[in-house]
Image (tube, rainbow over the protein chains, first blue to last red):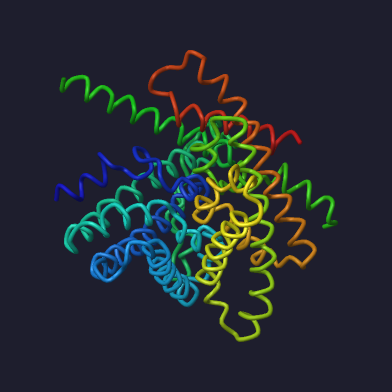
Length: 211
Length: 187
């Protein structure tokens, strides 16, 4: 339990470790995309952490990185094929950021720092914690960006071909929104900057109190 | 789209860092000195352009021909990793002075999503061979331009009075936000 919460709060991959920022900025313009990206990353992280933790004794130190990249790449390819079969719409909404999970520092970082050092159980729990932390961070950024930028919350749009119905919440905005800039690249940078600053502030406050 | 306009779009209004968010880690991590930024940028230009050309050829003449497109991601990352390794060896043997300045950044480039990102974008946008060269060259020059500009801004940021919670990454991201406004909206 402690390992899981550690990944969500103390070592939140985006807000605290600031790893894997590319997807956090790129596909957080819609709530739906953020959620799906988070799930994809969590699944890949879970399987790669699991496999690496099992085979860690078989891999010599000097070929660690290529072997890990191949393992992660294999799981990314499996997810890609599954998405291509069941929800081809996602190929367009997640675009190149799905294959880019191969070079996502979060997955590689966890493989190097946890899966290659600790036991199978710890690695799985860590993957779950980090996965949830990553997904929550993506969702938070996406909520801020979509509400401010478009005045909507898209829960089911692309995957409506799978679930059967669409669900897009329209918020009563009173012409205050949308602030178009938030759906664009600049809004992504601004939102993430404020989240990281907020967390630094909160954490700074915490350590100050404990002293 | 003509090649010249593709070249300038990929440098400016479709900048790889500021609009596609590829290569954010080196953008924030390594660009604190002007000289480092330029060396990093030069290695990226070399690696991105070469790997785009090689992956283009592999994709169309090997993967498509043998009907194994699904191996794209794994194939590309393998090509990039081995090419970086090869470049490291060649530079060390024949161009030791270049290796001394760029060698430090070469291993980092393998996991730089700008490289894999560009090669994937080339395939997704179904560019021709000439367009591939233009696009990858433009993108990597755009990358270098942005990390160079940012490194000069960062030297000023280091000496300015910033609220403690905004120091480091948050202020870097805010700077990137303003830069992306300039690159995307007004050019």
